Structure formats: C-alpha cells, structure tokens
Image 1: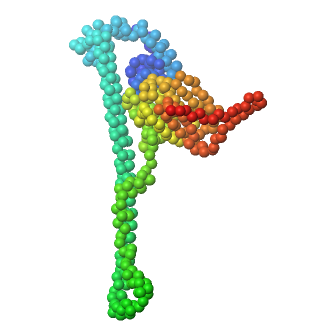
Image 2: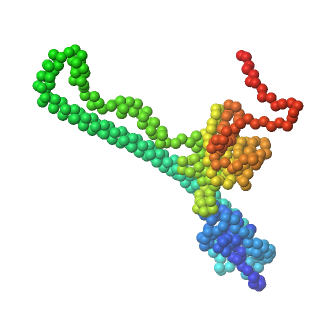
Image 3: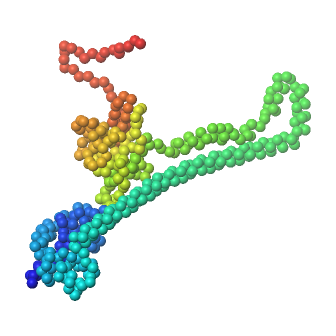
Length: 439
C-alpha cells in the first residue's frame, strides 16, 4: 500500500487553470495564482481582482517563491507514482466518463466501473485541451468585440455630446442677439412714438391758434423783404427725427450677427486626434488639452481598453494633431503651465507607433524634464538649453516652404539689439552695406 503523502494535489493546484502551479504569484488578499493565468483572467474580466475572493490586487504581484519551489518538488515527487492506480498498482491509462475519474484496465472490469463508458486518457486530455483553447479564444474574441462596441459607443457619445453643446451655445447666442436687437427696436419705436405724439400735440395747439397765425402772417406780408424771409425760415420748420432708423437694424444684418458671434467664439489652430492617443493619456472634451492619467484614474479605467487601431501609439504616451500639413506656414501656441515633463513638436505621418516606448525617430521637438529644456531632431542627440528658463507657453512655427521649424516664447516682449564684442586693435569689425542685385 502506498505511503501517505504529506501534501495533496489540491494544495498545489491553480484555481484558474486547475493544474499544478507554474510561476505562481501572491495576490494582495493572500491567494496564489499562476502569473499567466491571472494576467489572462484580468484581461478577460476587465478588472484586477482575485478569482476566488474578488478583492482588488496590485498591478504587478510578486512571485510566491516558496510555493513555486514546493510545486516543483511536488511534481518531482508525484511523477514516479502518479500514473499508477493506488488500488491495483496498474498504470492509469483510461478515463471513466460516467464517474469522471482515472482508472486502470483492472478498474474497468471491476463492479464499480463495469458497463461505464471510458476512453484513453490521452484522447480525453486532447479533447479537453481543444475545448479549453476554443473557450479561451471565444472569450478573447467576445472581449475584443465588447471593447470595440464600447469604443464605438464612446466615440459616438464623445462626438455627439460636445456637438450638441456647441450648437446649443450657438443657438443661445443667436437667441440673445435677436432678443437684444428686438428690444432695441422696441425701445426706439417707443421713443419715436412719444416724439410723434409730442409733435402732434404741438400741431393741434397750433391749429387752435391758426386764425391768429394767419392774421400775423398777413401782417408780416406787409413787412420788408429781409424781415419777411427771416420769419419764413422759422415758420417752415418741419418735424425731424420722427422716423425709425431702419438701416441701423436691417443693414448688413447677417454680417453684424456673425461678427458678434465671432467675438464670443474662440478658434484653436490644432485639434488633437483621439484615435492616435496612447491609452494612458487623458484628452479634454474639446480635444485641445492632454495629460497623463494619475494613479486613481489608472485604477478606475483598468480593463477599459481602446481599440488597437493602426493609428494609435500603443506604448509611447503620444498623441497627434488631427490635420497634417504638406505646405505653407503654420503657427500654434501651447500652454505648458507648470507641467514637469512634456515634449511637443512635429513628426512625420510614417512615424512608428507600435512596439516601442521611445519617441518616433522622425521627430523635431522641444521638451522639458528634470528641470532641463532640450531640443531634439532626427538622427541627432538632444541639445540642452541650460541658459533658457522654463517657459509657460511655447509657440511652434512650422514653415514647410522654407523647411524650418522654430520654438519661441510668445509672451517674451523684450527688445533685441545687435551686439558686438572686440579686443583686437588691428582689424575692426565692419558692418557691411546691403548689396542690391540687379535683375
């Protein structure tokens, strides 16, 4: 009879793959799982939790060295005896499909397993491996489909919500402008009405005194020519200012409204492309701001995967603008504020975006890290600008016609003057005249 073993196979069985531990890791809750199993489980599940107790765990759990060594020892201890039937001491070569257990050829003829369906262990193992592989592939495809559906919904929602908000804002601007213009029109209408009312009252008063006025006019007709003309200028005064200034409200109405709306709306020359953004970056709703996610955000969005489309940077925390340029001069300002680590510039459309944590090789950029401002160009090492202070804003000027790119501080307004230094008394520094070339 076989001697009693100090451990059973269950003590060294992974709760995910149900096999002996292979490179086990220790979770925060105290349970152990194979490293490959837990990574695959987290990918399918979408959250870093223990498969047994559902408690959250750290991103990179440590290897359980003690359990790893014990598992290897158990495998070495088990191999010489595991393939033998503990009852008949015969090799285990069959699997009872009815009782779901291993058996030898003697067990098959015993009363316990007689007339039970059985198959060779190798066939059952192969069938179950294929089934497990199929389920894993199916789970992976299902997971990818959910990721794509979620990404599709998020893209649609992220595009629809700001669009609705923007048009709602424009509608409100138009409504406010219409309301203000109608209010001004009503105000002027009331003023003109009141003016006309006053004039009419004055006219009525003059009508009552008309006989007297006629009598006075007859007297003036008998006066001298000069005095007569002076009196006529006073009497022929007409009612002025009684009409509404229609041109003020209808003239260039569309242009006037458009000008006022333009004053209330800002324009950003560069808009970020979320389809190129690395998954650890957080973009603002209007696609004009980008930053790295913090630890809490990293915990919150674990399992929320973005589609691995060809345009996206999968490792390097980069994002591109939505529009590429092939000619002309293009200028945009970037507010870097108090950011402690940033890089900005331009790169080519063919820049490598997969499989590397490094910057694309074809990049012209300025960056700030470890209190150092640096410049970088393709096939050149970084140039430290140790004499430059950290800017709050950076202006990027891309001149594709001249093949130049420049970085400057748009808030720097101090004047520059030509500068000369000489300690040579033999040959002077001479400023040359401009040479005019003939056609």
